[in-house]
Length: 219
Image 1 (cartoon, one colour):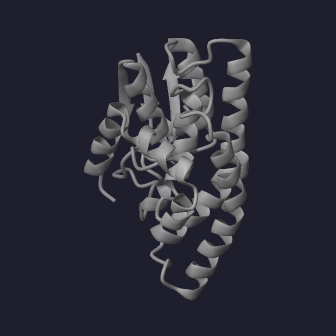
Image 2: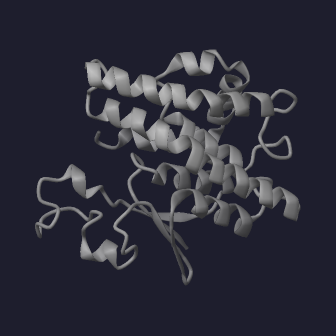
């Protein structure tokens, strides 16, 4: 059985969403971020990213990670590409060309988009959004994101989804990266195709199921 290591309030949300989309049975092993604990190495501490038990799975000490049979993987976006490819269905590419495009758009999300969306969510996580430094940091991130939003907006002019005009792993991966920036409504209002696209992605039953479980976890 597929095992997913990580809490839903982490990048593991991407893999939980993907597993729900694919209808793949999975076991969830909640692994909390060590930074959320006062003493992650305490014998009483819950399993976390510094626990020896988890480091045996992912020596990088980062969530998520998965075990699927004998395969052990980390890096959430790569995991999703693997799951889509292995378990088939419409979320995978139908041709080698489409597989290449799924990889390309996923890499684009990881390198060109996520550094700025993560910067935004960290400001909110630290309750700094109303401070001068926080406002300045959000403004810088939004300016950097405008070009990537422009690119995606243009790409979606004549299609509803990123690859093959159907919902695929590329849409899921990009949508989860962009979710971190949804506090900045103006970015989406100024890019109506992107806004409509992410609303389509997040209206899916599998996304709602993931978010329902995520909402039950402690903040």
